[in-house]
Image 1 (cartoon, rainbow, N blue to C red):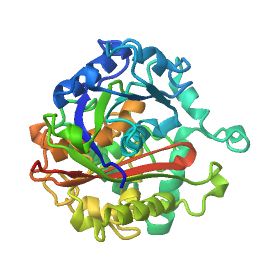
Image 2: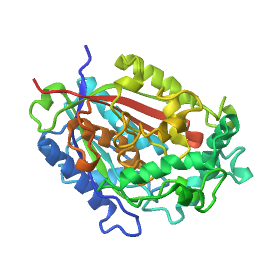
Image 3: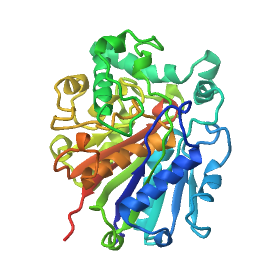
Length: 392
C-alpha cells in the first residue's frame, strides 16, 4: 500500500506590489521557508528534499530557483526538484512533493513558492507571449483577450451581465480585507467594478488580478513524521492534474470549463466524494479573472450550469455561508505568480489545521478543496482534496 502524504507546516509572507516591496525576492522566500519550519516544528536537518518552482522568462532569468535554494540556509546536501509548468507551477509543487512522499522515497519535502513578477521590465508584454504564436499572436491577441473568451461565451449562452460578474470581485475584496497577508485589502462596490477601466469585454480592470509579490512554503510529510510535528496534520486525500488543447480552436466549449469538470470527477472518485456541496467545508479557487469563478463553481459540481452567479449572490460562498470560497481574497486580491498558485493549498491547509487568521477561520472545517489553473486559454488544471486528521 502506498504511503500517505500529509501537509504538516506552512509559511507565508505579507503581499504587496513589487514596486513597494521592502525585501528582495530571496529574502521573501527565506522568510516563508523559515516560517514553515517554525510552524511545523521541523528542523532543517530533518528535511530530505526540496521542490521549488519558477517560470523562466517571467522572472527575467533562467532557473532562478537553482540560485535561490543555495541561499536558504538549509544546507548543501538536500536533493532539489525544480518545476516549471508555467502558470500552474505553484499548484503542482505540492503534487510533486506528495508523490515523492507517497513513493516512500522521502519523509519530509519542503515546497517553496517564490514571487514571479519581479524581473520582467514589461510584464504585460511577457505574459502576452503566452498566446499561441501560430494563429492567435498575429491577430494581436494577449492575455486579457484569452481571458475574455470564457465570459463572452458564457454571457451569450446564459444572459449573464457585467454586473453579475462583478459579484465575485466584491466578495473577494471583502474577504481580503480580513486577511492580513493579502495585497489588495480595500473593499469595492459592484458599481466601482463595472465602471473600472474596460479591458476586453466583458472584463474591466477591477476583474483582473493584480501584480503582487510574496512567498509561501509548505511541508509535505509521511504519516510517521506528523507525530513529531506541531500542527494538526492535513491529509492529501486526493489530487490530480489535467490538460486540454493548447490552441483556442481545440476547445469544445468556452461557455463551460469542461477540462476542470473532468478533473473534478476523477478527484472526487478518488476521495469518495458523492455530493461536493455537502461534503466540502471550504474552497480556494485560482480565478485570476473574476468571471471564471462562477464557471469554476459549476464545473466543480457546486452549482448547475448557468447558476454559478446565483450561488455567489446567495451568500453561501461568503465568510458566514455554508460554502466559503476564497476567504483569502484569492488571486483577485493577491497574485505573486508561483507563490500565488501555491497559495490555495497553503490557505486550505491553514483552515483545516485551525491556524488561519482569526477573522477568516472557518469553525470546525474538516475537508477543503484547493485548485490551480494556468496556461494558454487555461488549458492546465490541478486540484486536491485535503482533510484534517485528528491526532489519536
